[in-house]
Length: 137
Image 1 (cartoon, rainbow, N blue to C red):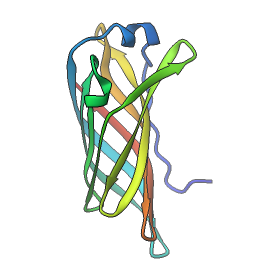
Image 2: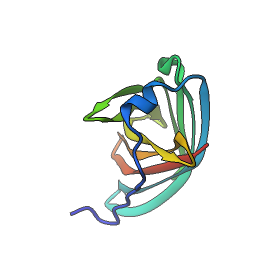
Image 3: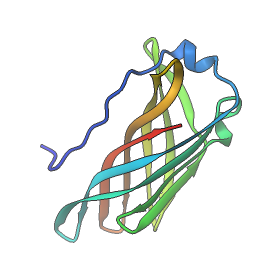
């Protein structure tokens, strides 16, 4: 059982729709998660910003800022098939910790990638955090 678990939901865009996208999109949102450190368990929040380059996903950026006083960032994002849908993954690091994220683009208002959401983790030095992120263009 996960104490204080969070989740994000949305209409995940099909792989074909995401594969057809070109250019860049900038997303802003939030991250919320559960922190385990020093025998304590608590919730923390932070900001989320991402710039996705659909023409060259290795040039994309992903950043969680001010999450429990720390920031994590990564460059590059891999979009892969998940059945007829898709998912994206990447790595993050910051504050002496490393981790990663997995998510999907979600459709809205005729835009196949109007929003993004998923899960993240960061671990290191007796600190562990797991949570979700959600952002919109």
